[in-house]
Every structure is written in C-alpha cells, then in structure tokens.
Amino acid sequence: MIDHPTEREARAFVEGHGLRYEPGADAWAGLYEDGRLVAVGARAGQVLKMFAIAPEHQGTDALGQLVTELRASAAAAGHETLFVFTAPANAPSFEALTFRLLAAHGPAVLLEHGPGLAAWLERQAPLVRPGRNGAIVMNANPFTRGHQYLAETAAARVDHLYLFVVAEDRSAFPYATRLRLAREGTAHLPNVTVLGTGPYAVSAATFPTYFLKRLEAGAEAQMGLDLDLFGRRIAPAFHIAARFAGEEPRCPLTAAYNRAMAELLPPLGVAVEIVPRLEADGAPVSASRVREALAAGDGAALPALVPPTTLAHLKLTKEPQP
Image (cartoon, rainbow, N blue to C red):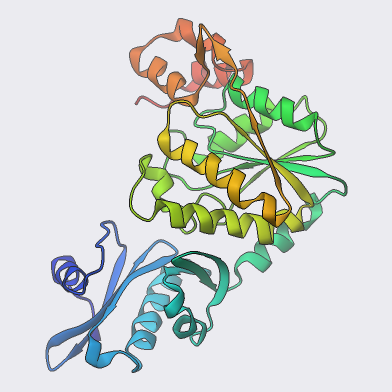
C-alpha cells in the first residue's frame, strides 16, 4: 500500500539503508507491507530523490509504485518534467519507467521524464545564430562590472555570445531581476543574447551543491553531470565552441567548477577560456562584494562595483537587504 510517511520515519528508513538524507523534500511516498515501511522516495521541486527499497522488495514493482505516486504529486504542483540523479546501475530501472538519460559522469547519471530538454531547446531555436559562438553561465547576483567586463571580453572573441543566467531562484536577487539586469548591462553589445538556463545548467537537478557554496560529497559528480549535459546537448544546439568564465580567487566551489570545465569540456569540442577578473580598489569585483556593501549600507562603494543599470535598480528598490 502506498502512503505518505512522516519525514522522521522516511529519514530513518533512508539512513538505515546507508543513503544520505537531504532535508527540504516537498513530498514523500512510502510503500507499506503489513504496516511496515519497505520502500520510500521523495520529491523536491522537479527532482525525485532518496529512493530506498528494502532488499526483499528490490526487483519488484516497488520503484514503479513510488514513482507513480511522486509523479502525481509533481503534476499537482505544476511540474511537467521530472529529474532523477542516481547511480548508473539504477538507470535501466528508471528508463523502464519512461525516464531518458540526459548526462553521465563517473558514479552518477541524470535522467528526465516529460517534455524536458527537447521541448526547451525547441523554444530556444529562434535564438540560435550561425558561426563560432561562445557562452557564459552566470548567477549574476547581482550583475556587476565584473560580469559586464567578462561579457565584453567574450563577445569580442566569438561571432555570437550566449549569456545564460541561472534560473534557479535560490539567490538574494530574484531570477527575474538578475535576468533583466544582465540584459540591461549588455544591451550595448549587439552580438550578445541573454537567456535563462531553465533547469539544464547549474540547477537543482544538475548541480544542487552549487547553491550551498561549499564543496561537499558528490559535488565533483554533479559538476561532471552539469558539464556533460552542457557539452553534449546544449553547446551543439547553439553552435557553442567556447565557454568563458572569470577567475575565481574567493570561492573554492566555483574554482573547482572552473577546473572541471577546463578538463571536461575541451574533449567535447568546447574550448574553455578563463578570463582574469576585473579589479576595483585592489580587489576582484564580485557580486559578494556588492551584497556585502549593501548589508553594510556602504552606498559609496557601489559605483565602482556595478554598472549604471544595476546601480539605478539598487537605488530604486533597495533590494535585497542581506
């Protein structure tokens, strides 16, 4: 019988089967036999996770029952596409439930169910331009002079530049604001297109550790999946031959991601160019410096850190208040 275990009950079951519990699930599904919990799975947004099945129920329809229940939960929440991050050995079980393989790297694979990547790429098709194109993926939290300098540098080296803004709404500045400020800050560059990543680059599905801003177990596998998906699926669709990023002197996670890019993307036909960071007052310009200045009420520091378009927004809205 399928039911909804308490989070405490589900956590004990997951950890009791040697798996890592992750807080923040939107829904749990549990399979019970004679009142005893024998399998669980969870959903967080569009991502299905934390599947644990008692050994005597593996190879049965237990996984299918859990996935059916979680799909219904996702549909009720308005999610058409779902993702699963799992071990390669589990991929065939999910493929039998109409999930499709998106990316693979080392000990992990990423699969999706629903209209997914094909539908997303079809919606972006009007933006595709011919030539040797480049890409930047940025959070832009908020868009700074450093982001602007990186975009200007990259745009000068390619026929067309795609600036992908992380669509996940887990930052101090909302996605809609970050997207608008990136567009305003690059409006003077005629060969730049600013668009969102959707759930297909640096997202809760492809790289959830990114939003913790620290290196954790599994981060390397997540980076690999994120980059494999970019190199094999997104780059060819946009004719992207080069990906650009700024040097990262402060954040170990982002620095590790830059190193992973340099290792994993060139074999997939995407060159990687790391651009020295723009500096102001002897230190690299960064979004974290902007947020620190806002938190300290140091408005005088902002003109050196952000372009006029971002500055106008900060003065108008006073958002955010970290």
